[in-house]
Length: 317
Image 1 (spheres, one colour):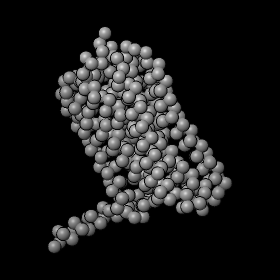
Image 2: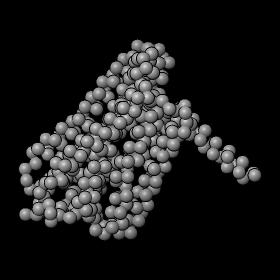
Image 3: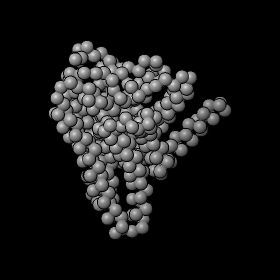
């Protein structure tokens, strides 16, 4: 029996020798990571410097973009190193750090979506009370709760998993997952499984139910209102719903892959599906909101035009 004191690293089994193609994969992943950083940073800067965007909806969006940077940083640097490495191992401490980053990212994302749904609900269904309800203090409290609650939950989750006595060190994932570590345990893990299901229920199911409830209420108001009200609701809610759907399905792939035997699934498909919510969502979110939301699109154009004008003046002088 191997105990936890003897295990210093975990092996990530899905990686395989890609030969000379590793440099191509490295370049593709690096380009994707650079695009994620640039796209999210651009929108964060645009929202911060533009006073017309200092509204609750855009402040919640800014929190979402920060989370995309946070989540992708929990995966991409490690992924890039593993692609170039001949030995696909990670230390135990780094593995739990990655679990913390990935799980808090997912939880923050869902809670942020709930807060944004709540904001849209009040803005569309209770427009007269919106400003008095969504004060700066309320917005700050909601954003703080969005980040604080997941951090507490994941600390509890990891504090249960870290002391486990393990009988192996091979993880069948391209990045570290809490349930993948629990499956290596020699001891009874019923408490960990129950808490894992509670965590999934709190971080995924409850937020999804709240989001669906708010949008049912929004749709009722839209269909009973004027054409202008419907158009305004569609323009602000469509990116939100598309982003939620994309992330939810990505998380479903991840949960199903963690909880069920996927040995019959092709290796490449397993890798791509497990990486989907950590690679596509951070890039999909800024592109979606940047292109679909008129105020953000105009602010981006103004920022670029202003920068080009200043550059031209410097060149002339």
